[in-house]
Figure 1 (cartoon, rainbow, N blue to C red):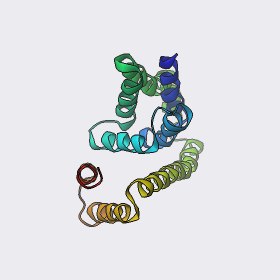
Figure 2 (figure 1 turned 90 degrees about the vertical axis):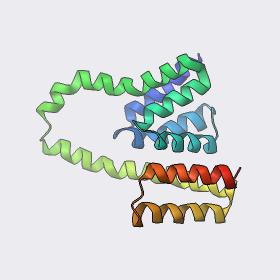
Figure 3 (figure 1 turned 60 degrees about the vertical axis):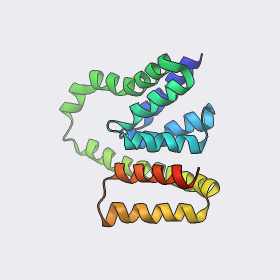
Figure 4 (figure 1 turned 30 degrees about the horizontal axis):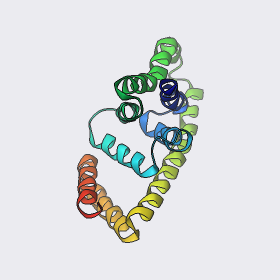
Length: 176
């Protein structure tokens, strides 16, 4: 039964998460944290940070890790397969159709209309992470990390992976 739940927890966000890994992260969080209660928001945010720090697609790394934590090695396999299965099925079934209509104004308009939805989902996820960070580390620590991260990313153009690693190091030293 647990393997079916792992499959559904990653297959459903893979189907409805138009736009790839970043757009499906809030959906995965709902499944993992709210629906199945496998992790807390804090644990999920740590898995997300770890997934962002490593190279490769984030959704598959997260599904592999969470699947392993919940169901062992086979759970990791099921999680990764469930994450890539929707894309694999759609690529095989619809490749010719998409290629035929790739320049259609309706397809371009649909893509334009979906982007605000993805932005809102990511905004909600960010708000939840700030909220859990505030509850766990306090306002001063949270604001410090936000401001330093903003300067590192925007002003000094530091690669996001290094900012994430730095934040993880800061948390391990000062917040544990």
